[in-house]
Length: 184
Image 1 (cartoon, rainbow, N blue to C red):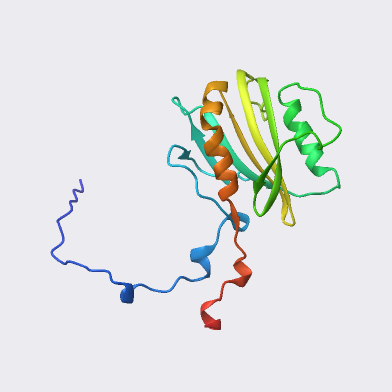
Image 2: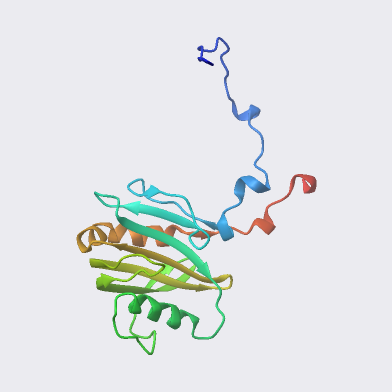
């Protein structure tokens, strides 16, 4: 049997501005160079292959918010992706982006998408009745950035403003412009 314990250290350490090291390239690296600032009310959960940032929200933690980046393979990639979201709610597809509300994000604007009903998320997940989606599709030079929130209508509405503020706060950081230690 192994027993271990912790003793309170007798050494006191004081950190001053002079004793801090300079930030290096990897201190400023973010998934796909996208930096986020999530509200404290959201609980971060592990990322997945497609979800660079992944959160849960709501009283039961069933609400989901995630950010993904997908390649823009065709001129209508934004429209195709938005129609896929509408299909997840069995809603009719749209033929144009013109009627969608636009919201600021990443130094440009994205298309705000809303849907209510039964959510068919796919990938073997059971359908979720009485769901609502609020999503933003932002075309950028790096691909289509999508931020999607799905949960109960009451909880999605309660998080609407935080979601929009989160989208506005996203930044693209260009790691190529950060000086590497050997360049200083």
